Length: 136
Image 1 (cartoon, helix red, strand yellow):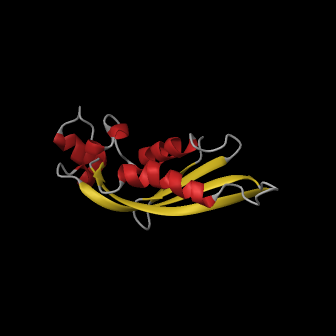
Image 2 (cartoon, rainbow, N blue to C red):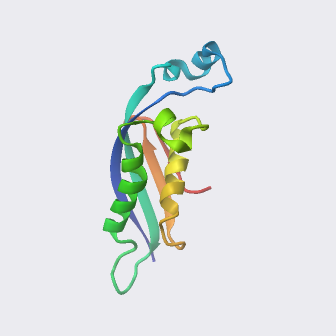
């Protein structure tokens, strides 16, 4: 029997969508207002879901306190109130689109989970725009 345990979190961060090798005009054409050279911010919402078998001794798939700590350390402490382009090493050469952010978050969390747990991360950039990644 497989059960999914999920934890919500949030962080606020600024970013700019652009490619360094493109002109400002080309960046504006492709990324629109999201390529503002002065950056812009989002109130990101995050859902981290771990799926696995219930441990018969503990009754847990994963201890929710452990998941909470992993999210706090790997996501909230690392991204909250940061400029993703400038202050977060993973985005030094990676455009911080929602798609790239969710993959980075997945990889940061996955390394802390037991190998038998399946992970899915859903990232809301706005209440209506969100992306999900489960390692495929």
